[in-house]
Amino acid sequence: TDPRNAKSSGIGLVPDDRKVDGLVLGMSVADNMMLGNWDSVSKAGIFQPARETERVEHWTKRLGIRMASASQPIGTLSGGNQQKAVLARWLEANTKVLLLAEPTRGIDVGARADIYNAIEELRRQGLSLALISTDMEEVLALSDRIVVFAQGRVVGTFSREEANQDVLLVAAAGMDTRE
Image (spheres, rainbow, N blue to C red):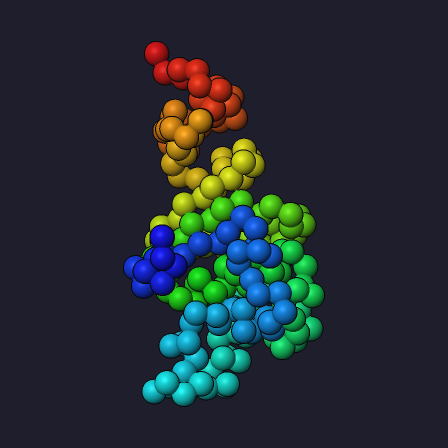
């Protein structure tokens, strides 16, 4: 329950409401991306601005973050670019397990594709990902294993091959999907 313990254990969270739980809107893009990642931009406890610039440029290019300047307030970016900045923060932290809660809610189609590509790349690299989503297409496209919950309990577990929209909807409705 303590974010510091989770981070030190290698667990990160891309929250479903980035503006409330994921960003400090008045701070710069760079500051938001490096928030909690002091070790990666300092040496012997001394902040290294050149290192911060290097790391921000790395994530900006890798995730396709579109912005005028890393010093602009993150609140001025589109929702998709804000979401990519939250993702960059956790990738900079060398997260081992990343929880993604509604990662593409409220973002445009282009940013959605960028986020999907980043998630697929991370999966291929072996990062453990837990996707929490109400978007059925997103779940089917990005998941290797799907666990369906209804009324706070697990009602079905499916491999990518077993899952389709009908099977998941039947499970979510609380009906037995397997004979």
